[in-house]
Length: 470
Image (cartoon, rainbow, N blue to C red):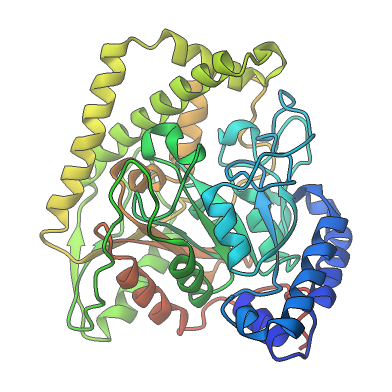
């Protein structure tokens, strides 16, 4: 596997590597891998100071140090979400200056309490509006597995940094597939948690009508499980904390969606990966229940409409509230904001009502199955430049995103948890991702099934984690 954050934390905890040495290795890797454009802002002094503080704590307060599962592990925050104190977020936009930095969000505080040492921000498209991370202000984020291809979006910089081994794990956000799509592009594990499971206060989680979640992109299922356990709960948001459901190790009914219809077809090799994952789980005694695209088609369309309307209204409000010079934004951003201003309240209300029905439709499916195995991407990661933002055709942009990841928005609009992981590679050595969805609060089941699929060993990371000795 070439290591993960758990391995790196263990090396630091056992003294074979100091936090300062791990940070120096990450900084060296960041410089070496600068051409992929994963990092939009770097503060080496911040990273080294944080690492030194962890090393001092290990010596002076070993019991406290031991309570931090990721003590001394270098990481990066996304240039959207949070915020993290000292890291000047710009949301990939020239509308914000890189100065100052707000106080820690609730989630940022939990990242620090877990022991992470932050040293920069990862590249995001402007306001997270794309499934590629290529903001006009730069840098353009390339996939480290094939630099001619996208690393995905909007957490593309985070995924590229983790896949390239600059860091072993990185903060990410997901409002329309933005954790899962980049993870799928780069051969990583990415989970969008149940709505309300992760704190989003005091501000980020209040945006986008609850469809946005924060967590991380990871190199292993165990890292995903560990960071979710550490960061989730007591979210103090507008939604109740989900109660995690105990893992049922009995015979599960696994719904299999191995078709995404004629309008948004998924290529054969990616469907074969989903079917291969189903066979692996069936060999454990689980029942495979075939599901038809027709059972998802309306919900997919309604989810796309809801995503478009919610982000547009949010963007229009932000432009007005923050008194931003909208004319300096990318043309596509301006078009989304204009759509938000022009959207009648009755139409938005209908959209939000449809979003409720999306959730209800999924609950009906989960009366028949315990989880759903489905495609994540319809094709290999697309070429750089496949999601341009120099135009004002929002419908075309949304159509391109849906064609690439037809089922990405479904989890965000419904509020259900979903996880992607690689399950093989194609003829170009690009990952073959699969996605699993489960009822709300069933992250333990998602993680258990993903861990089982991971044992098949069908994917191996290309780059080692900086600082880990082989």
